[in-house]
Length: 281
Image (cartoon, rainbow, N blue to C red):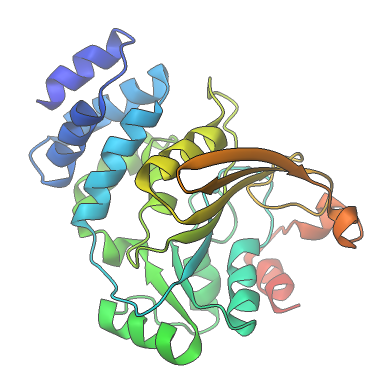
């Protein structure tokens, strides 16, 4: 079945949502071989991922994840990474500020793939136990207002795709799926999306449309004009607001919110130690 999908992709043809979900099922069930997985991922990237392809694969990945059962609403603040700008972990710091303001946060993340420090790296440096059970994460959210779901723990079906992805060493559709598959089912998100230089479409806009189809209650998909997969303070940010199945695009000027413009260098780090220091500030 995945061979049929690969054949369509190398002809430059888009997969339907069903064809994409069938391919994802083959990958995440262990049916597809490592060579087939690698071939599929490369062919899909070369063609360019469509909304329907991302949607179909997201649904399968959500279905196969471990679930964190939460009472009430939670938010996730997360980014795709891959902007190449080596900033400190802004989304994780923002998650703690949000939790301190009384909003429950179900933070979903992993180790760094391209930057200096991912969410898991900074939290581990602070002594956080990463591999918690779903029940333990739920208790963290309930008792202290924030919990962390370590992606490898909560997406065991991804173990089949891991080795081919590591051997390829390139961006694939799975870089986009992680932020769309929060195990606590967060219906509120701030999702930062980097724009890969080789992508032939606007990735942030595509993910906003995927979230609209998935029925998110309220999500901001964001990208700084400086390239950050964040709401930036160095200049304007692009926002795709997703609410009630609709997508609205607008721009934010931080100076209109009373914020001083920052220099990108103020947000960047050179070492993991530098990342910890900026996170503490």
